[in-house]
Amino acid sequence: MKFFVDTADVAAISELNDLGFVDGVTTNPSLIMKSGRDILEVTKEICDLIDGPVSAEVTATEADDMIAEGRKLAKIADNIAVKVPLTWAGLKTCKTLTDEGRMVNVTLCFSANQALLAAKAGASFISPFIGRLDDINIDGIDLIADIRTIFDNYGYGTEILAASIRTVNHVSDCARIGADVITAPPEVLKKLASHPLTDAGLASFMADWAKTGQKIL
Image (spheres, rainbow, N blue to C red):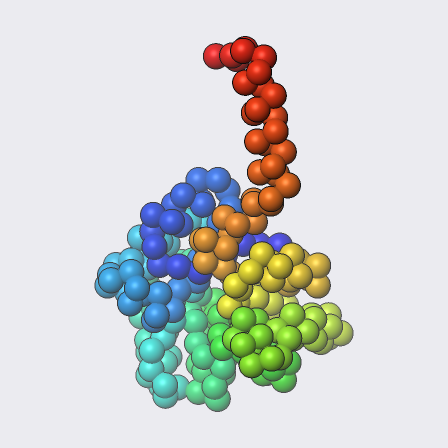
């Protein structure tokens, strides 16, 4: 399973990339606002840093304007995936940009039917939002499973990019079900390395080592 980082924080991306944990990056208007940087500038910097897809989201709501914005964003770098919302205008934009040979990430997906439409429109990625479904007492992981089954039934090449990842259990559940990609904030990815038994075991080893009075260096 691929790991994308859901942030526009270049320093955080760089730290994880140095460890080999970054297969791509996703951004959105909220993350750009949080970074406090110009969208074109920070997106170009991220694209220069990593080789994988970098999702940059359009902000228009009408298809013609979405397409124009998508074309402009795609010019930033060859690894740009134009991110569009799962609306009728977004699907039109997806079809147009995909036909032009561009990567498209269709976001804000909350149903299997929406995912099916995105796949038929040629989306490179479909982004179902797990955490936001959980917020309204709908199991977001069930949606990932449903999309996986449908895509496998018909051989769709659209990659399932599980988004709105909030817990480490979301990550392992997505891996178990067969999501192609997860995108998560840096702090969630770092938590994947944590376990209380690891901490307890290390503390025990260090206590015993101190008693030996030895040093390796």
